[in-house]
Image 1 (cartoon, rainbow, N blue to C red):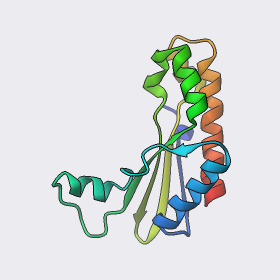
Image 2 (cartoon, rainbow, N blue to C red):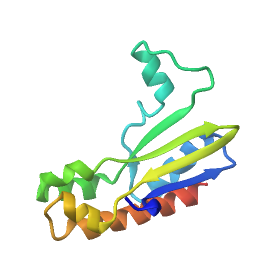
Image 3 (cartoon, one colour):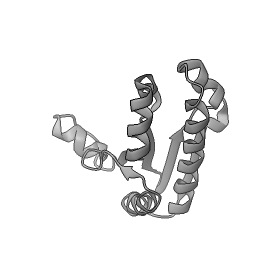
Image 4 (cartoon, helix red, strand yellow):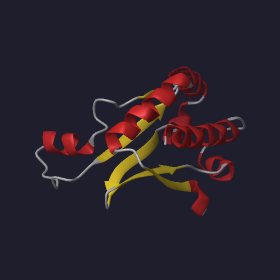
Length: 136
């Protein structure tokens, strides 16, 4: 895996404020937060009886563009292995950190036999990175 596929940045906003900003940017671009009710991992872990530190603040945000995803998966369900796209937002040392993992078109081609999908998904990764930055 190439280092540039693991995107890391930070923001001066709180985790909560950044998540709200990202949600607004996603919405403006036809994307949604698919798991809004369960993205707060402290709440999710506690709901299942797991203990977390008081300052544990991690949001695993699943980014989705429903109309594009529906068409893509209808064309080739094998694509589903790479469809979940998560933006991780967490606090560390008083700073809000943001992480996003993507794959190159070459890596995608190695995982899914499909002529169209690698280029399309690579473009989506670029768009998600730009939305991450816009929300900062």
